[in-house]
Image 1 (tube, helix red, strand yellow):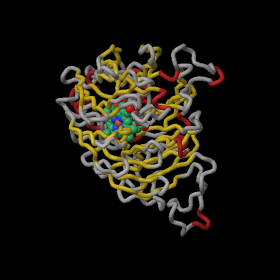
Image 2 (tube, rainbow, N blue to C red):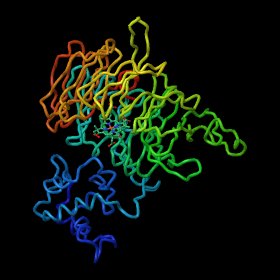
Image 3 (cartoon, rainbow, N blue to C red):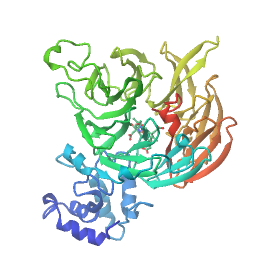
Image 4 (cartoon, protein in one colour):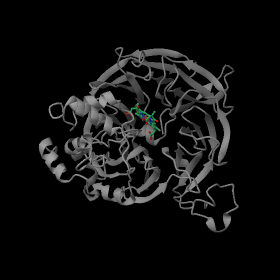
Length: 523
Ligand code: DHE
């Protein structure tokens, strides 16, 4: 429910914090009167998103002015053009991009207090409440109006739609049976959804600025990676807090934003990358995990007296350079990663050290890297990996044994997502970072390593992010517009089959491809 702005203003005026009282700048008072009811007095977000510089990094100030002036369609954000002057709106937009001091905190008690139980698990059906194949469902994240659609992957029709938290980011993560799925919003909210009952079960706010979430392959733990505060937050499967792990060096002298955390199912562990310190963390959820001595497994100097249990504690691999964006080989023994500056490295998770450099430059986007078996000119099968690049129009294909570049495939422009399926001979790449070519999806033949087809939307639109049906027969692309669509393509003929209207469908995720960790999809 939205409070009328006038009532909210009175309520908030009565509850103004000391720093916004007499003598405080007019802009801070305007904020408290008009914005704080939804975005919270401390700007940490409440019904509306957090208004802090890091959380707003992806919104241009001019865009913020437009939103304050005209409101945001299909959300609770009202227009303030009639309540505030142009100068007041400009000042407000300026002000929300300034840091809050002292820096906001999000403590264990904040996390615990934020938890909401939406549905009593005792009321849930133990089997799906619909007839569609529960393993061939798609979840479509529509950021145009912050909803998620559930698609039947056989009929390719929506069967359910529900409101999500503001600005979900990263792929939703499924439990191994495909029943439960966890979403993370950039504002730190983790949502647990029961796909069989089509119900939101519980939510918790893990942080103020969150990167992503992962769920353990045994379904017992959920972990969130945060930029703010700089930590990893571990929950049980019901989203009750288990522990907060500060992302600091062993001696506590340096702290880091956590870039991302993933489940490494065959290892029974989570693997997390640190953006600001050269360490890769592995957190085992195997109760029989080896103890950790000083955190660096090869250093036994401190063995006596400082062993920590290997279960649910961080085992650190020291690196020469930070590793930001990464993904795994198919058996999860190696991590292929790069810093945002493009220095690529291969880290062996068993040897716990860097074993090779990756010949990548620019800004590779390894989070959407894929692997497949490629036959070279002599017919020899080689496993290759490929990545897009956020800064140059190229897909780089690398041999995973020699770590040499096999081919640089020129594309229309810098791209974000690369996607395939083990049953498909094609990989799809977008050029969504290019102004001129964001409407063009290119199809690469995984054997000839040539672009064989282009699929185009209207110039100026964005066509990106593919996900296949469970059997690889159809490929679903996102027409990434406010009144956009899921464009269903025949994965053999590459012809369009149908369109499903959607509100800016950023990403879509097929249950089977995710839980089977298909080689053509993200982890
Ligand atoms: Fe993402 C996944 C990082 C900007 C849409 N993005 C991811 C993941 C990471 C990441 C580490 C994997 C997490 C996971 O799935 O668990 N993204 C980053 C960035 O560092 C970057 C460049 C800057 C930032 O602001 O964070 C960035 N990402 C964007 C966008 O601007 C996109 C295009 C639009 C948006 O809504 O934010 C965007 N990112 C996505 C999507 C995925 C994603 C749709 C999931 C892809 C998948 O298929 O799994």
